[in-house]
Length: 163
Image (cartoon, rainbow, N blue to C red; front, side):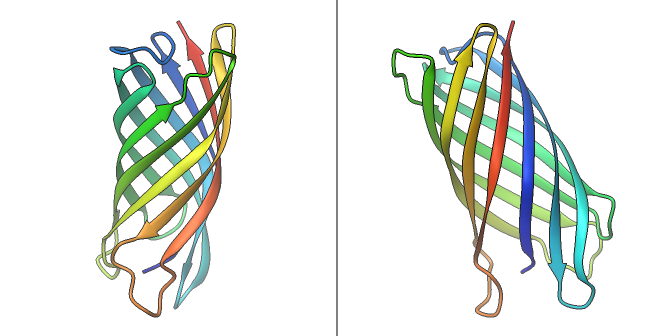
């Protein structure tokens, strides 16, 4: 398993409202990251992706997303299914927590695909027309061998706009 560290992920999310039941969110993700390969050392990547979320009940969203890691070889493709809960506080600050499942595939057949699961926690500060959030993601690799790293963590920054 390869060590994956995403240094910064910026997600611009367009929400049809706040965190209310029935709302749909569409997102774009941009960022950077690196992967350490045994034979070639560390490779830097540009990360881009799209996602969609649906609020099942007030504050609880389930989604689906794709992220591609581009600019180095091999190209990496990731599909993610997240579940996130934004805790209602009655104020402009909303803590959030969630979990996700991710499948990662490489464009080069010399590397094995793998699955991971993780958690994310943080806080979102709401403002007129949107919110900004900061958090931490911890990812656990389900297919990790004893010689590989079994987890990695990275920060996230989320900016959302309501229309």
